[in-house]
Image (tube, rainbow, N blue to C red; front, top):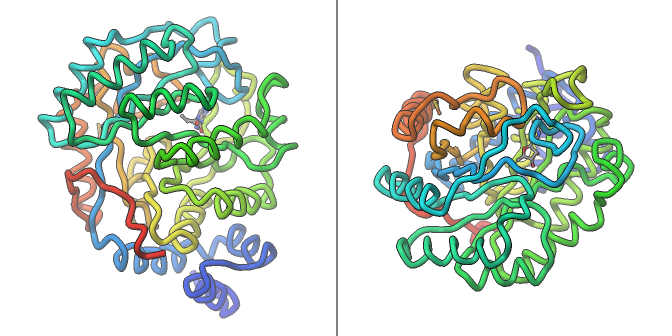
Length: 352
Ligand code: 5AD
Ligand code: FES
């Protein structure tokens, strides 16, 4: 595809200034011809900061019970067809044991907002992992909680927290969430987490229903304000048992452009090539890496529950054992021209 000089200029400007005006960002977000040159520019920056390293995070999906009813999500409480499960502490520890042996030094405990996992139960799990594996990063991704709860979990040994803001625009937020959820509270959570001392990950879905280019620009602006260590984005994918069953899936190329724009705006950020990206295209994650991503999150959950953690349709990696998933990703990362590193993979802030 031929690239107009204006587009080339905008990409160069973004690479140098790490910023553009709202109008300029909108042009890049919408321009199909920008996908490739944005990827090339982003890969250059990523190699400058992180070389060809790709960090591993082992994902443990510990519960699919959720008190929330987000319109997009397959494990929303309103989906009464969902078969619910929660892992026992022993099962979680077994996932960690297996993961540690496979070289993982970061565990991500993710789940719906499940009231069974009280602060007391969660702190016990976190401190047991911390005692057994002093050299790993413990990442939690368990949704919105009070500042006090976040503090207790931090004191128990957790050091990172993933909570996507989902969309930074208040009106858009209310279009994809029920009234009992508020964008203000979600943002409050993110700033609390940061103040407590967590390394924070945020992010959003690309192509979620009703999303506009202006919304995506607002997401970038919010991220500039929050300055998170990790930014996870992936395409919206409909799930048939949700109110958004008939909505359109997010576009691959748009996700790739957003990954590249994020790399150029946040050179130091940890950007995962997400499972959702791998779900909409067989080489989606490889494309994500080439567009600027530098993290992959293989699944460490027991195979028996994987299909049940059903956020969206046709989710990949649900039939494979942890070792297979790790091996598969290693091969994919190598084929894409990068290499997996097994260290703890902290953010490289010195680049800022
Ligand atoms: N499509 C894509 N991503 C989804 N998530 C939830 N439901 C969907 C869906 N239908 C994402 C949300 C959430 C993360 C765990 O998964 O962004 O934060
Ligand atoms: Fe999980 Fe390929 S990465 S099976």
